[in-house]
Image (cartoon, rainbow, N blue to C red; front, side, top):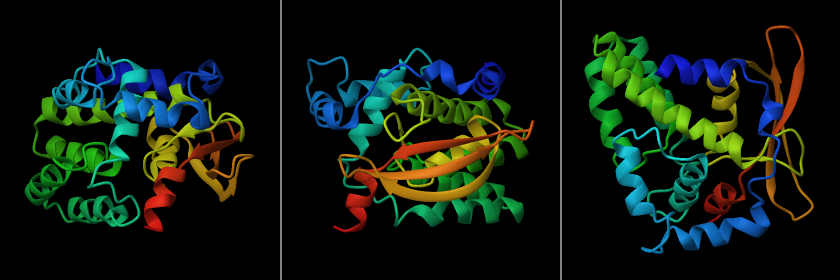
Length: 223
């Protein structure tokens, strides 16, 4: 199953995600409110149970609502937590796979959508020859990537993709669409929302500038 998900994201052109499914100014607060409503299909506690079980029937909208819900979680500290996944990467390089699995799972218990941690724990399980668990963590990462691309095609300042962490756009480019990162920058859209701007360089040499909207993350940095 994971091979199919990776293939889908790696070889499907980004423009197919071009329909407007999410407008930050119009939808962010409304969706956040819905995630707290027990009668809503977007109620986060119900969806979180399914995500924890790696339920691949979760829709892109439901996954996006989970990401939005986490911006209001007490554990959401996107800039403070940037180094955790990088430390796991180093531990994997040192072949300390048991330590990666232990500390990574502890972190994911309170930070379930941290892409770098999902990838590093998956790698550690793979090296321990537990292919089923390794795939489960990758599937969760792919569900997040699909939700990001569902939110917007990321091809313009007007249609940015939602990103929970300030490095999620980089991870989507490297892991989700199998491209290299070129020029990196930032800016603000017409509403004053902070936008990460990244160039994705594909194998054929073409470059696509991608935009990721992250004001919820930058807001936490200044709290």
